[in-house]
Figure: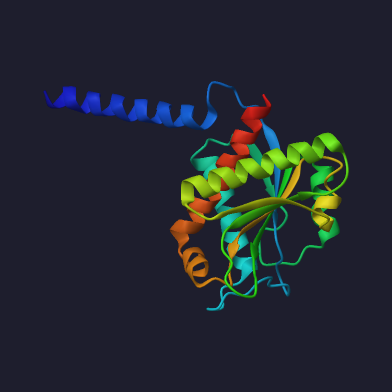
Length: 220
């Protein structure tokens, strides 16, 4: 009887695994795609600074590293992922975009945290404001996929997908869909406390990653 229940438990775990795999990938086989994650700021450029001293450059690097780890360990590497920086170093905007072009990336996702005077919360995503029409449309689709997954699953306030002329978007818009995701506001007491917790950084990383996977699945 004990052996029977152990086998049953093993089968249940396997079925749960298959269900989770199906929920992520649907019925479509996901080809290997090249994803460049641009880790904002770095080195002498700290980016936004939270009320408690939390730095934007640190948050986005932690989230990006978690995306790499989760892509390999949890999702079994459905995409090939590169970061524009792996340590606390400053990389020029031109070099960030150049990496995407040289790798012939399928998408480019730049990670940042927001700042504002007054009370502002939530995630928003920027897309190229000019360039190839089809790539701009695809960028908007990618932006909405990331925004939808992150706000619905994590409960973050959903802001908008906004056209912008940021250099990293402008210089990648000609080669692949490109977005710049502002994950949250470090000037908001609630959101800065949220990003202080490692488990929440992992949750954001997974949500962004699943949004990317859904975007590729919708393209198939």
